[in-house]
Image (cartoon, rainbow, N blue to C red; front, side, top):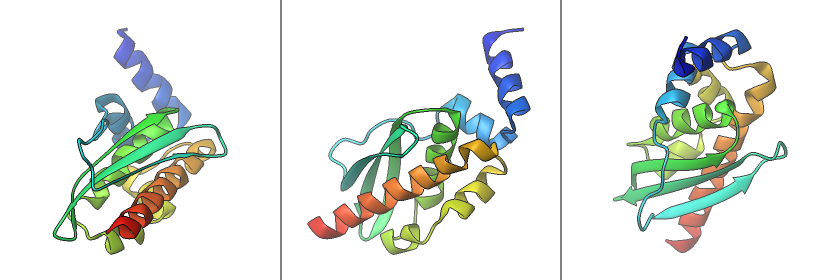
Length: 134
């Protein structure tokens, strides 16, 4: 068994959906954005840290990326959220909540639900910062 298959099997047994596993393994939207319209880093109570970068043009989120120091749940949640917000206004993106992220992922372990909250909280803080600097 190769390393990727081993990781996939471990994540499946832990309760991650196939979509969450794909987001984690393929690092969807992981990285930074040069000269972002907004960025914010937040450390959750669990110790994981996420930083979200937004490029907003004509009041539309054209690009969204994130970086994280954390577990598979943080990476899957960050990937899901950044994918969900592209093409939305900041006001529409702010309405996305933890349940929306969890539903989009299709399942992560109960012990990792706080990771979706970390992503949402970081996004809201980034948008708040964007509005302050507008």
